[in-house]
Image (cartoon, rainbow, N blue to C red; front, side, top):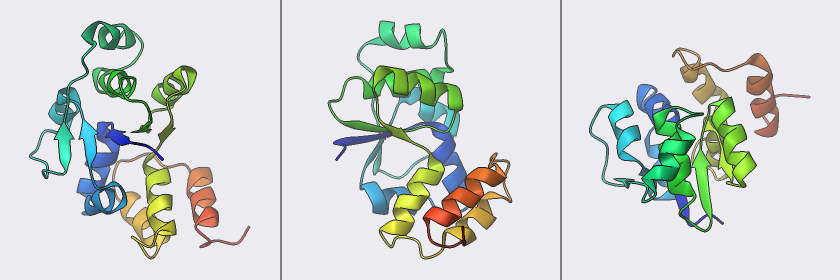
Length: 154
């Protein structure tokens, strides 16, 4: 079980857009973001989303040669915890986290966990809201998520 949840901006921004930010709180209680991610989000956030800066800014700067500033700050912060869980949607950032052995999930993974724990009743309804935004969701991922949620036949 992770001792800390650290989110990049995409999950938070998407959940704000569809009016479902509460899912993160109900699922995890508290979520950490970095100042860089807070700036990317660009709006006040509830107090259960705490802003914390990575201590090793040299490491963060090194990561930023490969990834964007928000993702690099999230990965640098996660590396300072023993059992973190990163919420990342960017493929390159996920590969980078995986190469470091940092556990991650994405927004769809968060929603699947929320469905399994009864926080949301129907994943398909949430996906329909997501499809009204500019969030990129492939048909393959959508179908897989719905199957895993038990909402679509194989």
